[in-house]
Length: 247
Length: 264
Image (cartoon, rainbow over all chains, first blue to last red; front, side):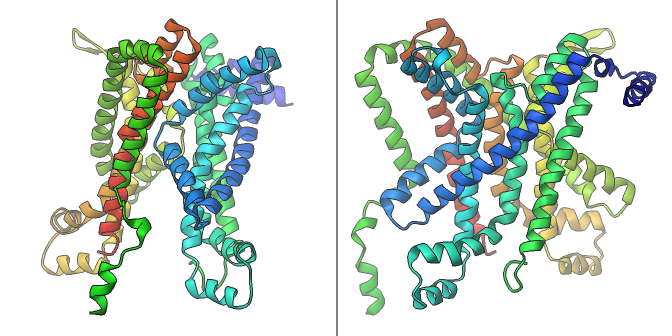
């Protein structure tokens, strides 16, 4: 049944001059579908890791201790003011090379290109999340903080039970904006030959010369993924809304 | 008296209040001075490659300037169309913005590079369509979508009372836009527009993936040619430094403008 649908789809494409014949080739189809799966996997993994990095950095930025806040600020500025691709190259061609020499050869190196992509994108977007969370923490009303302190909350409790829950709600829209950017940024992993959807499509159009056809599919894949993420954001915003705070 | 006193008493830690940009430039200069001292030989090789890198950086600046120029022109038009009251004008404009904002820039660069022809025929004249111009267009497309959103947001941020007031004075819709609304938008548009420029500048490195010899590509070539561990480390550090020195002042200036215009 699906095979006949595929044939019908390819025939329909051919009538408007689009060549989707690769869908019938089991090997190419599998590598392309695997590309979509990898893009989704990379997106989810990077979103989660970058959020952890962002929370840690935001904690340092708002700690009130200059010896913690200053280096964190420097790191955030460095991450935000240099191109992501340069960061990926610095990690993959410099840090990875040094690591190879340290462990004695590439065969002993536990970190793959995929792992480096997750690490770099997570730290890069972690810096953006940190800024969003910091703004959220600073938006917590002063009276709220003072009343919590007067009730005997310690600094840690204050952060965990009062500041972070509110800050998270304030930061939610910008966080989800960043998450959409994370999804889009996973294409950069193709630069170090991670076989996500852009790379998989590139391999196909190199062989079949059907750039436009693959481009349409890529547009659709990213359109669906970014739509899912932004819908999830709106859903979460509505679910977590507290009367009187935010909008 | 009280105010005078509070003005003279300064916390000791705020004494060296250098602007962050100066501070950063100082730190970077010191770090490179240290590198030049301890890695004299490698830095000397790097120095030989400097003209090569400078040529690359020129390409980044050229691409980013062209892309923001095209993006701004196109974006202003699309943004105005988005606000049109005619449905068949507004809907396609909004679709355009949605598509180009939600597609990765790299994909758009691949799109313009591989889908557009390598030369354009004008009658009997064949005009070459080099890769760097195609990459520029690939950057200009998302830029125009972002500019359209910036413009739309700025125009909508002006209260509707002003539209009504202008209408009562006999201005038409486009006249109101041209003479009343847009002049007030400049302030609101400037900071996000500069942010966008910094973003585009950083995205110009993506052109290296379609074979444009810009800074990152030059660095990669140099690192492959020299093929020394310490040189590879140093040259990528140099690329990181150059981009930081170019983009950080823009970001700082944007933040300052944002603060300045925050409550007006």
